[in-house]
Image 1 (cartoon, rainbow, N blue to C red):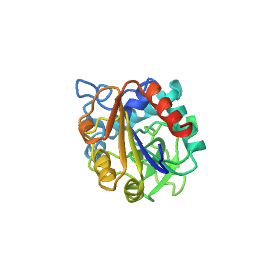
Image 2 (image 1 turned 180 degrees about the vertical axis):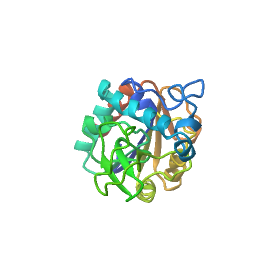
Image 3 (image 1 turned 90 degrees about the horizontal axis):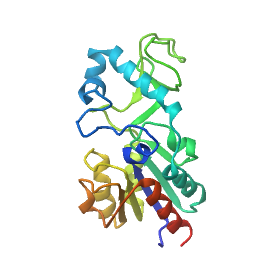
Length: 233
């Protein structure tokens, strides 16, 4: 395809095929909860036990899912692509890492990370936070929260992501809804910089018309096909 600098954005549609629930279902709920009740700083201040329980259960559920062919294909691309590559995920699960991806940014945080708001340190975290464990760094009790970017908070590493998007010559969006900003604006940023833009999605997204090309189907089929095209042209 003649590309050398690739940025790939992944969303909930990639992990859905592994059995990870999508962010918001057709009924507007996130795993049975209103987003406003579990994914805002205000919700955490209002009912911290509910929020901690919600994320503790999601963290524990990761043990029951495995990377699917889309994750594995992206890890293969990461390992074998000789040019610049950045994989940006909106997902908070660890399936990209478990598949083997390394050139990776979790722009919305990670379930297996805890953030101490007392000393502003982040720690790899496997267990529960509901029992308010002390911070491993400063010892503060009651100050550890999920290291998740909630509504109203700034996604991580935005400056690095935007630099990569503006410098890439191929931008690929996989399994995203196209309506959650700032990620939904990356296609326009890439397009203005002259990159080819490609969407892979199960169904047309709200942003499909803004891509040069849209391919519809399961990520577990489309992503390995794309990776084969890129690595074995």
